[in-house]
Image 1 (spheres, rainbow, N blue to C red):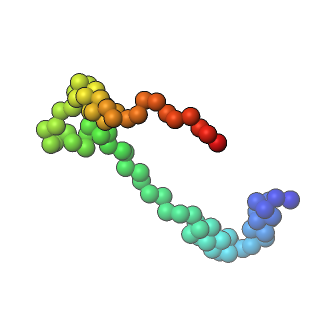
Image 2 (cartoon, rainbow, N blue to C red):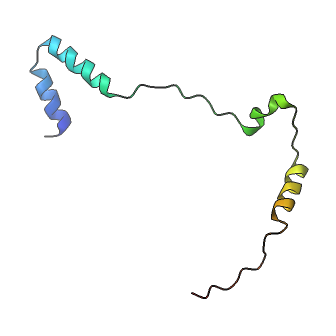
Image 3 (cartoon, one colour):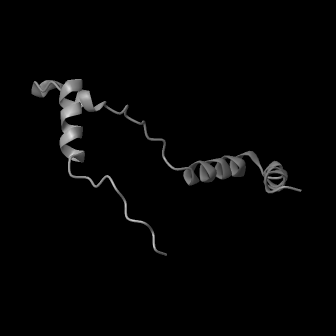
Amino acid sequence: MTIEEAVIEKLRGLPPEKQRQVLAFVESLRPPATAKRPLKSAEGLWANLGISITQRDIAQARREMWRNFPRDFPADDS
């Protein structure tokens, strides 16, 4: 017999008022349902700031960011 079946069997043996108390208790065990707010896109976060980022800006930032990154990796001597 599963736990669910055992609980249902015991629940059926209770008077209606006790069944309501069990229901209220079970409902109190559940975490409160919170409405999730939709996530804003990064573009939406700065939309009112008058910032405009183009593909060209992104490419330039990538070049600057990776400019000094080493191209050759030393051999692993392990």
